Image (cartoon, rainbow, N blue to C red; front, top):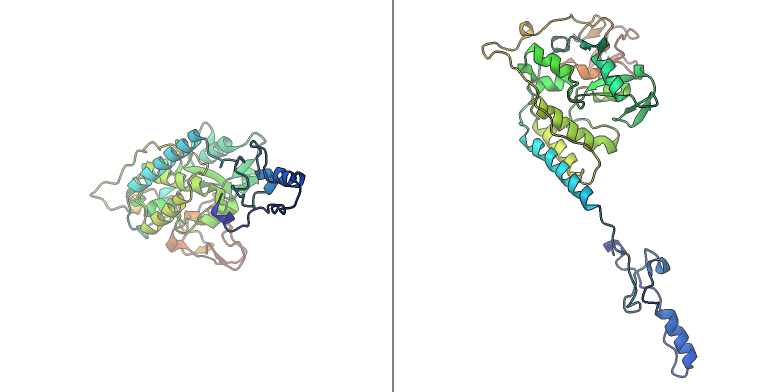
Length: 328
């Protein structure tokens, strides 16, 4: 019986017969009070009624439901694995400034005649030809309505240790299909909502996906030897506390090959490929990619908000409400 039931009155019991009542009446009342030993009184008195065990000494009571021990054990081991990796993540302040998307991401790689985007869409496509956008638990029918999100955004990776990576490491990170947690197809709206924010600032709108998101975030950061800042760590820790019994998948990630620039060189524009200049439609400077979409998640904090110089001329569709300012 739960504490919520405390204080409820016991079920009413017929009063004892008067001294001059006949034995037939007394026996009838006794039969109303004493159920058969095998009787389950839960259906007779209801879930919200306290059962008087003195009145029902031989009654049986339903036992509390218990989780499958194997499920309980699997859940515990999974959470221990996630928490173990989480506790080993480096906690460091983020490096702000210096990030330029065009310097670390020249676009999707092609293999087998398909781009990384095409491969991810193919891998995540369901049997009915649609996709599930896990961030908001929405069904998406057209690939044009999907963005391929870097689960750990490029700008976040830069600020968490990626500023020391070589160009080749960046290419492999940005196109990482070896671990399916690195890239995910999501609705354009949720990708724009997320931008370059980490868990200290943003969680998926679908609360049922947040445990999976936390586990995947930790896995990707572990795989690429990236740090977390203190606010990010605190938010992840709070979410993991809510994940006992939650249904989410997890495997320990395989460490990626991370190569750092030479210690004798400072990470700079000259050590990374330069594939474009500033887009003339926006201020401050954001990359100009002809025919390649860019979203708010590709911009660093010092590049946001974005001002559209000529309202209505918004090639990247960053200004969703048409007020001339995007990525706010």
